[in-house]
Length: 497
Image (cartoon, rainbow, N blue to C red):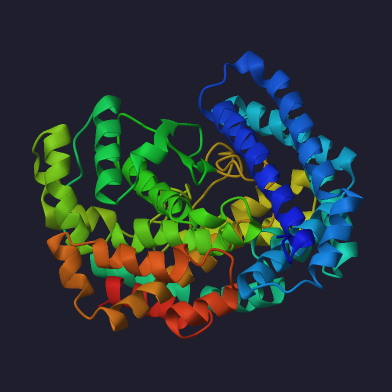
């Protein structure tokens, strides 16, 4: 008996093939960051550019367009309609860009990111600009083409690739409000903590012991090591595919907190990926809903759970077992360490309260950069000005811990940064809803009973994947669309309560 949806089936088969090729592409990219010897970069960049072109040709095949059009007229289920909606988004994005641009983007970002790895520790801003100019030119060209296709501004068109439906008008309102109350909260929290005695951990902390600790904590958080692994890269990330999730972190012998909290962050990403609906893998509807939703999972793990006093109580003995007992590992002291508000230079090491200031800084710069209001050479002066304004930190001359600290710009990820703070807002909203649904949540975390928390996230967020739009998913999960009031309430309760 023939299928009543032959066109839809053909579309689905194409996206299953795209998923398989994307699997190889993602592992080649992970290896490029985690294992590849330096001299392999040009060959790897060329191979990845070829793969990007192949996938682009599949997405822009006129036969696929005809199949999508016919599938729209077929008797589809609600889930199939949702998948076709996501297919349409992917098709429109792909068809806005020529294959030559897709290849140039891959080559430019691979070269810039590879050079950045050595330019950052050398504080070599001038050297960085030599490659970054190509990345910026490609990003602006991509933004212009996507804007023409969507009718959006250039920056909105890029942000829409990561956060479908989000617009700078909304981000400006959310971040503008944040700018009003965040400095006062930072000041109040620091004044409140000024009288606290905090014992700093005494190192060095052997990298092997740190790695073992990170993997142990990943296990506590439910990461499936039969479907993923932890490695090392210049900048932590979560890559791979849902069937084989590749997490990375970075280690420093003088401190374990960065590697541990970074690993907890990436484990949140990893668990989302590992719990996407397996029966639908390969289809766009089975992919994570958006970057802000993804960051809401990593920040639920790192900030909401990772700094929860009940969870810290469980971490404390693991640290003593890993590094030897010392006063700094007392649970109360450890909690004070992990919730210490200290404005600093580095975003990924920032405390929960100052973290959004780092995001606002990058958003304001990269938006102006993509819209052509500033050039790359203007970044350091703007960075120094905004760092002082938002955090009171002097970054002059320190490019390594300034604009070179993140991989996002050399990798061409313009439009992504807002998703971190949007994700923090969603994470606070999830935990507010969790406490309504599970009134004893905090007591359970204190007992080490994390299963109800993970089950809630699996049922409300992970298994939903891209079945619904972001607003509808938030409504279904928490009974409201994004509400930033939960974020402020969370920060004030934890740091001023």
